[in-house]
Image (cartoon, rainbow, N blue to C red; front, side, top):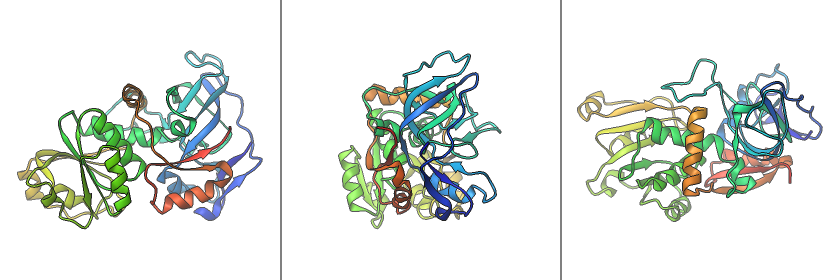
Length: 333
């Protein structure tokens, strides 16, 4: 089968399109085989290129995908051949718990991922594809939308009528969080260094658009936000805290601009702030997220689409962080 793999040399130098990679085995008991129609890129795919060891066997990368069930193993209860499904990338995390279990993994490392024509995985790792989504929209949905859902609602406790601040708008997760926040009736404040990304966020319903160079607190005219979702890290963390009301909450799920920060603890405890970490999410939360998407007919924003043979080019584009929304991979027509 056709696939995009990593083998040998760390980084992009070890990544390539394989026109005839080995086909996956027949599904075992409780497993299904999916013929993939589309997949989506995540920054995790770039990290996998360095985490996958040079002496490990060739690996199909990719965590996001959607396709049609082509074969089912014994004892499969709820999935049939011909079903259109989304791939759930959260492995070994069934129920919504305060933290992932010890055996939690993400699809695409150590197991083969979605940048291939077929994949075999447990029945619990698929969910029915919403009819209103195209294959490309479905293919880019799972990982980022699940990450955003847990950060916003499970960890952040966002409710309608509250205000959330999402710095760094334009990434897949941030874009999904904006769409979900507006769907439940929250006010959304976003920031970016890109005027074009801010314009696009405004069209998606963002209520206040902040340039990274302006005074964020002044732009709020004395108002404060209930919730900050931080994925940038050192570059914005303390600026984001300055926008948070007393008793408010910060949820952190990434640190793309630095892992370590200097924190004024006195201000933190006097303001009674809450700080929560978050990591992707459980299968239970995935289904909750999907229900929210279907109820409000939320459609993923697909910035660009590439053919499977062009996945290397797509990864290079993702590395620039120039996209607004998601980057899709077309696999089977």
